[in-house]
Image 1 (cartoon, helix red, strand yellow):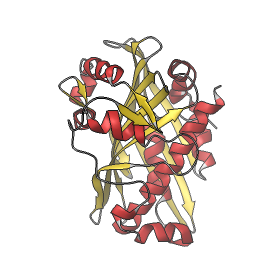
Image 2 (cartoon, helix red, strand yellow):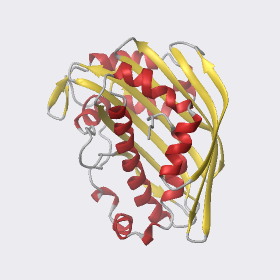
Image 3 (cartoon, rainbow, N blue to C red):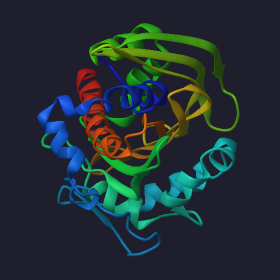
Length: 297
């Protein structure tokens, strides 16, 4: 199975289709009742602009220069300012990487073992209609970031690969590339407008999520600095909003995917159950993202 961190449509659909009726699983029920702050590896995002100097990831020291350069170039991309500004301002401040980006996301980066650590930018919350989540996560990938961009990145527009991913999660899927883009603006390499529809039957209920989204991939500096973006254009059913901003960075200590994600999904009137399931599903998919990189070796 292959998955890129840019596949928002599938990720949003799987989150929306897997959290409901989680009480049938004992482990998921425990997650449902756990206090937000007590969920493993999670906490409030650190205040932007705090801290100076270098960041650590898994005990490693990483220069923030490449992150600052990424911030400067990302700010030149139109979609970052118009569609993803809420995410970008958590990662960058006046051309400099924030503490969240250069310290927290790297120091907590998932390396393939244990449980991924999500940093809540805002607490997961919900009313009787929708549940929302806004979190950051880092992944230290086992391949060079250029190889990830060249080999794993294009699978975001691979219909067969995305259908296979959804089916592996127990859903039937439709995935249609409606438009494909190449060199569409500064630093742009490739992108797609896609329609994604997932249906998952749980007991006697069929849960359907459908959306139209756009994903794009950018090359800032060959071999060392890339960006993945995606956002929903039309949340047709089950998914109101899902936006994603990822820095693909090569440092002296390895390559990282540093991601901010913002989610708003229907909760069928049980927001307390949605909270735990959003977290559980996101962590499971982060593990698959790491595996997709490992499989590309």
